[in-house]
Image (cartoon, rainbow, N blue to C red; front, side, top):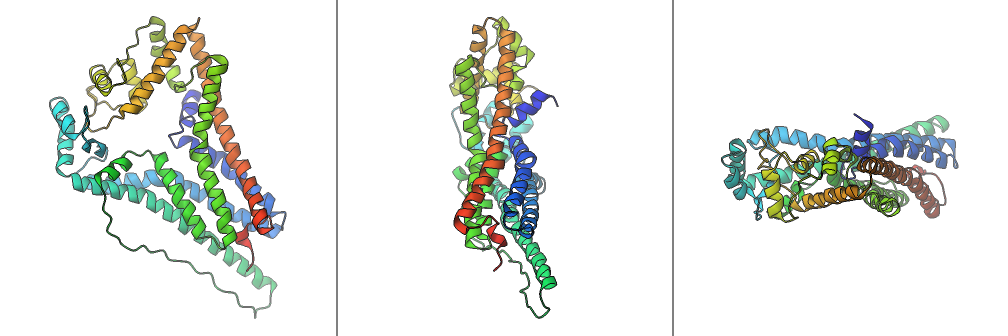
Length: 418
């Protein structure tokens, strides 16, 4: 993997890669260090307990948070959906018939050019209720299981270990006559309810990206951490920390990226809205120089579908495909099982077109592209560093400041002796 590939991956705020870098590479080690440093203000024993709890909390939680959803979804696809005879890659958003796409529309349009794929669509059509229930079950499993593990199971195990260690510590320092309550684990059960899933709701969650589901599980994690807290002060501190983390992970990076890209545009006249991998595409550079890059006539659904269906080998169609915005079969026919987000594709077309126009206005197209690619890479790295600093340093410092404000102590409130 080249440097450009790495920068491109961590620059996509709709993917998990920037989260992996910030969470595992920067945020967790810094949190552990700050936790120990703050608790040392009270005592070395408190610092040791807090450091151990933080290590056992952060890394297992990160592993479940980052890998739990894909693992559950793959398992569900293989052992549930495929065993029912359906292709999990088929989008149920096609159940909603639009002017130029939908189950019925795609069956009629591709029945002679994508025969096998159309058979899968027909099976989907005949089993709509079953497919919707399976999709709802997949979404529930992929979000609820990680929430239970991260928000309830892991903290309970962590707290039980701390109680056990503190018990042994007291037994070694006190007389044998002192009785200490044995640690207990809470068993979580959920009552069964009849849930009515509507097609619109299922269609909305069907094509959520992994990072969107991670935001949902983060909300569930917040609820879990607050409700499993050992006292009210710990619950308040956990709520402060988790809400701040959600904002800095999922909201702030998007606005930081927009601010940096707009600043480069205003200060240097460089359009950097495209992915750096696209900018270094040799065919794109040659096409800009020769002025022969074809694009859809307009942003209308009619013109976009007409273009991507009739010109699958065009530079725009191929780059859009590499970005996951369109899916083509091996024979060059657009995959009728996949839903096309027309608004997203139209926005991409605008960014593509604006970059071309900006490059053509420059005196040297090659230098313009090089500068734009460098500026975009700089912005991506800056975004990661800024958001990581906020998550790894600023938020923990604010958390312990809030902790000191409500408890009068620097040590973690959950470690307080009853």
